[in-house]
Image 1 (cartoon, helix red, strand yellow):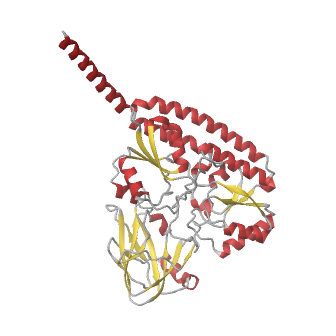
Image 2: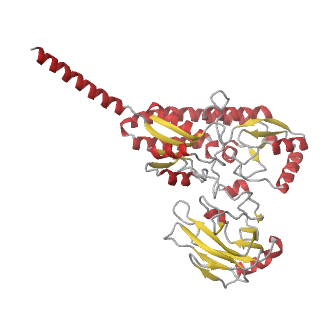
Image 3: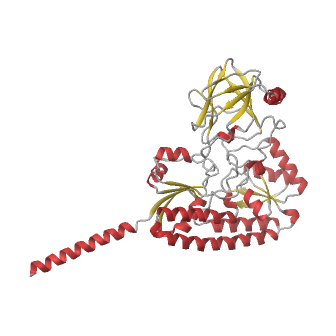
Length: 443
C-alpha cells in the first residue's frame, strides 16, 4: 500500500513537472529584431510581453552610418522575424542578413505607404542636360581595369538598360555638350554582362542580365588621368549595398566631382525613407507589424490585434494634436531649417516647409553653393529659427545661425529616439516633443 501511494505521488509529480515544462516553453516570447529605435518602439507597443525584442541601432543612434557588430549578427541569426524600415534606409541590412545566416521572415514595415520620391524632396533627381543624362561623375583613374556594377533592387533593375558615355576629361561642363550629342545619337554600341568599356567617342547601350542579381562591366583605362562618366539614369538607382565603381581589389572608387552633387555615394535610392515622420503612416507600420507577428505566433494573434488597435487609437489622436499645433503657426512663419532632410513626410502631412543643407542621409555633404543659397533664403524670407538634430554634427547649422542672425529654436529628433530619461523616449513622445518645439520657436 505504501509502495502504491509512493508510486502515485511520484507519477503525479512527474506529470506536473512535464506540464510545467510545457507551459514554460509555451510562454517563451517570440525572438524578433528591429533595425532602429523608432521601429523597435512600434514593435514593442504591438508585441508587448509576447516578443523578445532586440533593437540594433539604439537610442540616439544614427542608422545612416551604423556598422553592425558580431552581436547584431547573432541576434539576427536567432530571430524569427526581422523588422526593417525599407525604402533603402538601412543600407547595411542585406550584408548583415547574409553574414548572419538569418532564416526567419524579413518584414518591410513601410510596405503600402505612399512614399515620397526623393527627387521631390531633395532636388537630386533633376536631369542636368535637358534630359540627355541624369548624372555625371569625374574620376581620377590610374591605367588599368575597373568594375562597374548595377544591382537589382527589390528583385529588379531600375531599368532593363541605360546609356553611358565615357570621356577623357576632368570637367563636366566642358564635356557636357559632347556627351549629350553622343547620348542622343541614334547609333550606340550594345554591351552585355562582363563586356568591356573604354573611353571613346560613342555611347554604350548597357543591357542588364535579368537572370543575375548584379550586372557587371569591365572598364578599361589605357592612360592615367581624369575621366568623366555620363549616365542616362542616376547610377544610384541601381545600387543596393555597394558602390558602382570599384578597382580589381574590390575597393570603392569615389568621384572627385559629380552632378547632381549628392555628396557621399550612399544615399536612399528613389524614395525618402523617413516615413515615420507622419503619424498617419504609423497606422500602416502598425498593420504590417501586427500581421507579421500574428503569422509567426498565431497563438497570440488576438493579443497583437488588440495591442495594435489600442496603439493606433493613440496615434490617430496624436495626428490630430500635431495638426492643431501647426495650424497655430502663422502662414508666413512656417519654414523650418534642419541639418539633414528627414522631415519630408512631416512637411507633407502638417503643412510645414523644411529646408536642409544636407540631403536625405547624414552621410551627405552640403556643398558651399547649397549653404550659400540657404543663407540667402533665410535672410530673404526672414526665417527666425533653425533647428539642430540629435544625430548630426550641428556645427554647420550653428554657423548658419550666426551668419543669418536666426536663433537656434531647439533640438529635433529625426531618425532616433532619446534615451529613457529624455524627452523622446517613445514614438508618441518624440512626435509630441518635435511638434511642440517647432510651435514654440515659430509661433
